[in-house]
Image (tube, rainbow, N blue to C red):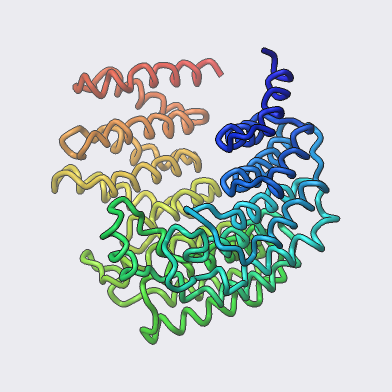
Length: 470
């Protein structure tokens, strides 16, 4: 049976008396349907007697909209938008059953149908207010006394609408997204009591079902929209969080939301925000930060600092190299890794001194003090790659030392990874300095460790030959 005949057969199945047959039909059309499937899916969404079929019809409309962009077939956007808006309006306050939530699926589907890379802008004047209303609606935020399977639990619909607004990408949603971020903020805290109570009845239930993620996704959507109108309020939030951190007026569950604020600033990409980001980063530092035994606050806040550093790179902060070197100097392997990667991409020789010192210290530590742990080896690997990208002849001796670190100096086979990165780095430098190629040739002749030689020898030979032939 050819594809067209199969679709015709499935369309016929949508008139079946068996709800399971109809359910399988609407799911099939989401993955394989063409422009002829849009209207039948809209009818199933609005008229089918099974809530499961209605929910799947909404999901399939969203999938078809995304496929239409990729596969370049016609999609009746106006029909899908009308049907999804009707479904949202009729399901706003309906009780759901068995975990089915037509409202949440319709909201997400509407986001896909009106995503920013489609020709859906004429519909935004209706879509953005409808999704904003669902996102801000208290009725379906955290109803009291309902079982966890009723569909509206823990902001499921609010979250779906917030995420959909990010896909739509209309700056007209920014105000309502900030309102949702603030309104739902407190509910991002894990409801441990309810979770423990639910575990008595269902041991497989996931703790994530007891967190309202609306604030997280509202801030994500602000970043996805990426409009500078959001910057004043985002920068104001970083100042508020800085002050609260210094006063000790914060909870650990809040920090992922703080990280989202930094990431949203990064996505907007305005270099004028770099001062606010750097001030935020420094506010999260403590006097304990450089200790080998870090203070618990430093461990907890590392994720936020990572997001800030990434945002500084995204906004292309003035004096970015200087800022990244400052970050790299602190004894935190996650931050060092985040800083070393863009230093290599930027390729500024000003980074060489600090990167050389780090690699030299790590090599000597491995040779004299015993194995260093995988996280340190991971940073070494990124530093080696960065030195190869910068491509300075001054790096050859440091890379050679890393190349010759033997298995007993690094745990869990990380030496093979470092050796391979050192080979690539030396080969890159070998494009303009023959001494790097000579060191690779010497390694081929003199390395005494068969396992490592087997892994690296073929790669090294290929790279040497390629460089010699150029």
